[in-house]
Length: 284
Image 1: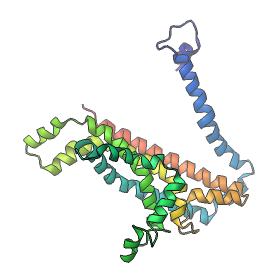
Image 2 (image 1 turned 135 degrees about the vertical axis):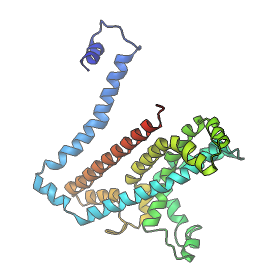
Image 3 (image 1 turned 180 degrees about the horizontal axis):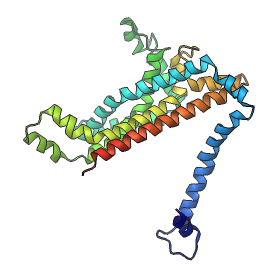
Image 4 (image 1 turned 90 degrees about the horizontal axis):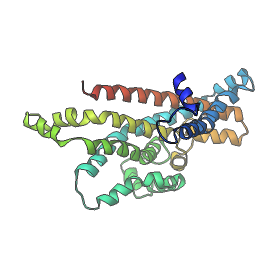
């Protein structure tokens, strides 16, 4: 580490790459001012009014209900996105279907749409009189203004992350392995589970982590279909807005602090599992 910084700031040393010193300096400045500094402020500022004020803000049943609702819906939506994302990626890579380029572009549509447009569209579709909500209501299933509606909204906005994480890995997967397994007498199920799915596990975990991270912070596409009832269908980002409207800045920062801590912990665990599966897939 000492040699790295010595080579970085000593002008007499020959640089390995042109512009390396400028690029690494710009990267460190960008990371410090736009990521580390705001997060450090969020970690420090809530405690400036005293530990008692912050601890009292943390003892809020409504806050924990909103956090549990947000995280549980995000996890369920990310889990549901894994098989659907895998099937879509498989269709884009292996199947030669008419209109494949249009379907490929439509997968990225949830990332380009404004979240408010997504929320209004989903709320209209899944309402009791909507195109999809009316048949479901006849079956006794209420999609809008509840947990199911939130999960469907988070699946919509998180599905592209799984597809785009799996698709490049699936394209580079050699067909020779599948043909060799078939010649050795493996069944289609064994080929899928041991030859195809195993190399795709790190990409699936990455897609799950990205979909989950998007889901826990989603606001615009959820509030129109969630119902926003405290202790029942209220999401954590909405509770932050409510606390700010009430001028309860300590309560808002308490929710944000817990949301940040659990999000970082979840992403750390996902990255750890991803590295573990990547090491298992490496040839000995």
